[in-house]
Length: 148
Image (cartoon, rainbow, N blue to C red):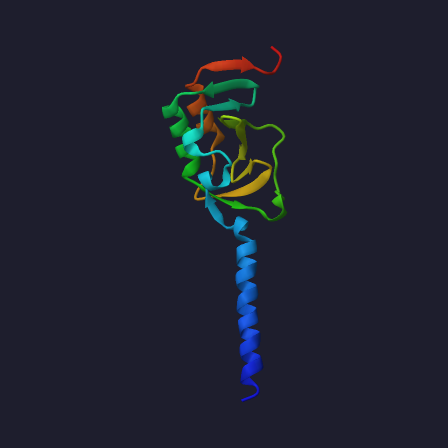
């Protein structure tokens, strides 16, 4: 009889600790795109991209913003522990998402993305920069940031 009480106490404490650990580490679970952004999808007013050669593109068209947002929302994102990546390219694109005073940024590179100073593993696919460039190539050219 005496053995059951300590075992039950240890079991309850263990379950409590596991639950607490799960709650504390929830930001490492898979999330949808809109869950990791600080801006709300309905508040987005502009999306800008600077691509490899330094050309900038932007859109304020709600339909184009929705298409771009839907592209990123087809994936799930899982934050990497300590935001450490095994690979970070030297040259890649950067996407800024504007919603009033708030700005989020995305630096996608294949199976990972750097989003608002956090590194995420992309689940359910790969962010294809060529496809993103095709989406943005249909947008008006805004600036050339390479100095030419």
